[in-house]
Length: 199
Image (cartoon, rainbow, N blue to C red; front, side, top):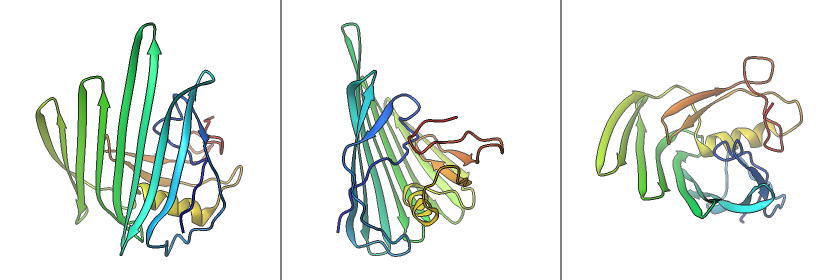
């Protein structure tokens, strides 16, 4: 059974543009045992100054004990006669319990493509970043408890969404290999509203 949903806050784009749900249904997903195969398929419209500027397509699928989160973002912006197009794909693979295994991010802007791939094992993250024909490899400590796509979504399902309900989670930004602690309002962090805006 595929769940199509909308309204999930997307940190990548909500700062720049408004993200509006394209289709919403209310089928429950068990965060401890999601169904095999594709179980979530979400399309979001990106609007800028009231005009369609792009879309986001996000999927969640399960194969055995592995969950793959995948998000494709396409944005086209015009400035005078020039048009700027940004294509971004992010994916991560985790266990059903939310333990990270691997991730990939590909961003195309103009003639430049940047690719980041990583593997998480034994408390370390092994990253390979490629751009303009050059490859850089890094090894970093992976912060305990940092969540990727499925882990964060499963936490959202467990806690539920309600106005004023605070939560703190560690989120892995696999594209930049930056780890963000997300704190509730009044504790040093910005408050995210359910409509995707920030305080």
